[in-house]
Image (cartoon, rainbow, N blue to C red; front, top):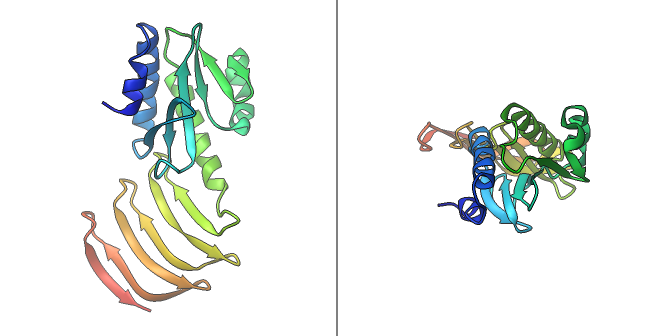
Length: 189
């Protein structure tokens, strides 16, 4: 049982069923996400527990809420969400019905795009995620150039390639991995 499943145990049916169905939609759409409790609520994050949050949700006395951690996503879907937008950063949904899966999937995809658009960070940290929440690449930028160790991953999360850059130029040992994550080919620059 995950921390999210444990959290949902506190609710009675049909609220627990509505929340569990919404969680199931998120899990299916974001199999690469990490499940945590953040700010006291079930949250799906990218890469690890300290990574960017994609979406959170929780149940309340008279409704359930979805937290997309983004005002821009709320604006993007404002027409479709209508009166479901309950407060800044919160989307309400019925206590006894799951959040509509097609709309939820589009919100999740928009959140991944938004997270990807937030890189590189001012520190130089670079990340990109597939639409399923799996890490696609990570490395660092220095003066708008790739610098230091970089890694690329397949959509299923297995490592594809690793190597280093110095001021945007490949340097040192580069390794390409097979689907099992074992070194397949090594190149030196």
